[in-house]
Length: 338
Image (spheres, rainbow, N blue to C red):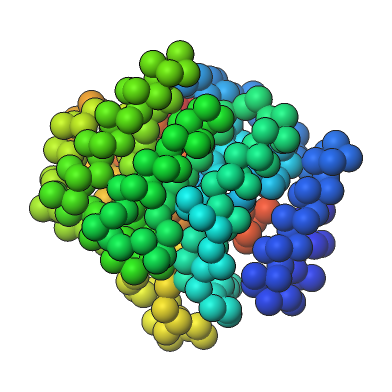
């Protein structure tokens, strides 16, 4: 209810300024233990990747890149929270402005470029948060790391976040880091997932527990590319796939203000595309590897559609900007008996 009053003020601000102000508000709420969620429906727990999730709805990576608001975001009712994308070294990301609203279509275009304070700062924030719920940590590479050495950045992040994560997401699908999506190719996937899998096994021995690995993929993939990814997921025994990141396509927004801005499109226009990719990958995997559906969820019905297309969990981000905490409650309600 409160978000309905706050939204006009936030939408009067520059999109990134509103984002920063929202995070500041959440930090205040978690420091003072203020209630921020609607009354949530009871939900049936679900086990995915060997983890028991209290409900099927989670927060996608990108909102809290540095892990500064974990408890405040969890208080909205999410069954899990994913933070990041984090890189080994701090980096400012792409020049501003880099975040644009398309309110007529409940959409966002962003070219943030993995702006974050670096993995050491994120780990310290996680330690200080006191959060005991399910935490995903999304890792990437620094912009100035050559693509041929990308695996070094992912390994560095994996080693540092492993003791603090419920699961780790390998992000190779952002359109805003040059050449990153090349890592979705067959040889590149083998060169990345092989070392990460072996390092994960070594870290499991070292820490006495196994942290699952998930792979986040793009929506701009054809059937042949999805087949390559499906086989790589099997071959390297990856625990889950997150389907999908933002799209470079502009179907449905072509004539709107900001539609020609470079970056990834998220929100309602992405729903059909991301869900089609989800359904196709689900068919290729035949239930062997769990899928997390994300992209375009702006209603409880959309969340349910992700499950019907083959997902076991659903994540939100852009829909939260337009709908507020009420969307979390609605999505939990729509998926609680699935």
